[in-house]
Image (cartoon, rainbow, N blue to C red; front, side, top):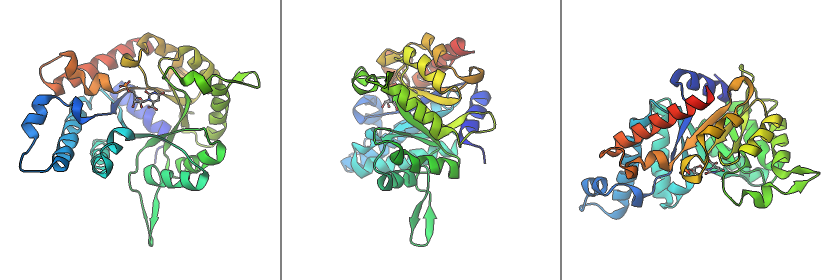
Amino acid sequence: MLNFSDKLIEAIKKKNSVLIAGIDTTVENIPDYFIRKYYDDEKNEIENLKYILYEYNRRIIDAIEENVIGVKFQAAFFEQYSYYGIEVLHKLIQYAQNKKLIVIFDGKRNDISSSAKGYSNAYIGETTLFDKKIKFFDCDAMTVNPYLGEDGIKPFVEDCERFKKGLFVLVKTSNPSSKDFQDLIVDSKYLFEKVAEKVHEWGASCKGKHGYSDIGAVVGATQPQAAKMVRSILPDSFLLIPGIGVQGGKIEDLKYFLGKNKMGIIVNSSRDIIYAYKNHIHSDFEKSSFIASKNLKESINSVIN
Ligand SMILES: O=C(O)c1cc(=O)[nH]c(=O)n1[C@@H]1O[C@H](COP(=O)(O)O)[C@@H](O)[C@H]1O
């Protein structure tokens, strides 16, 4: 079985893309005509929610699959619909896996080690149930928050080693308030540099055949200066880069995020892809998302290749 980093590299080569689509859909942003067409008065609200949320995202995945290497599911957008949303998330994860897309669960999870182990079991590892071991979500990778320190991260790293999965540790996030804690100076370094040093340490034992580690970092596209510093600490870890487009990150700056052999980045875009219909690219939402993802893929390639 391939290491996560090798799986990423092979997908990038095959599709000539580093783009990940963020599936961050809320029902109120689904086009009216789609809701009108599929809303069934014979069913209750919850049955309509489950059908419409699944069907919209499924069609987006179909429309964009040739332009992206994978999808990132942001847990919040599903959790807001309680366990009905989680059921849809589970079905969509399986749908994307069947299409051989790389699936990233973005829940930014963490806790003390015993609780962190539960999160890891659920999303990248396996859960013991009576005398069986079950891989419930079985995603390729997940995002984690490093705030609790090493013992809260180790359960995830161990599952990455065991099941050839990947991790993206928040190092320098895309939001304006990332400076509040991440830019604090500790021992004459930024705190985010200290976290990057830890990511380097945690990732040393899980490297693939291309020399990249399976333990990566999240660095926002809005943070090109930080990216240069992170790269000097983490030359061979994948960076998951959110924040292009709506949040102000510039595609031209992605060159500062590249690692060893001009590789090692995956770039997420959510709203610009899933709600591309709002930009009137095409009257059809699927075609709009296809065109938006194709254009994004090509613009990113023109900067990094
Ligand atoms: O871990 C993330 O994915 C993440 C980290 C970060 O620093 N900034 C950030 O925007 N994200 C996520 O990336 C996505 C960005 O969405 P768009 O701004 O719509 O492309 C959302 O799912 C965010 O939760």
